[in-house]
Image (cartoon, rainbow, N blue to C red; front, side):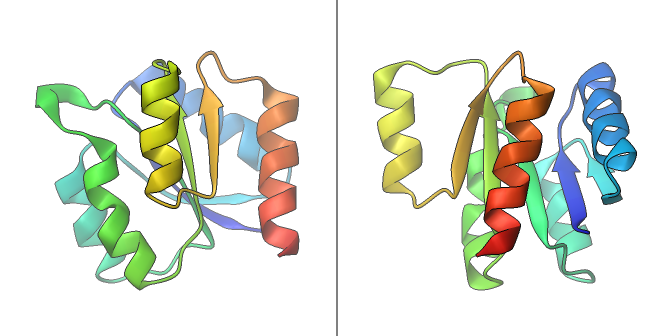
Length: 119
């Protein structure tokens, strides 16, 4: 199963994703609340997949992490509460593996993870 890095600043959501992943035999290698913390982690570790919240606290945009992930060829699922057409187009233009809208449906999340891992 996959080693997953969660980049999410909301504790309750990060715990929810962690429980869903662990119950389905995935390993959560870390939960990082900021882009800076995620970069530090990625300098030392190589997860199989990243769940990336788009809007983080203090005005951080999770998409700032994309160059680091692209360089390491790590697939990304962006999780956003803002799924308007312009945001979706921006995400697609940046080459994101997949997008999920909040609130996240557990079954859809797991299907997307499995699909990415089969590639």
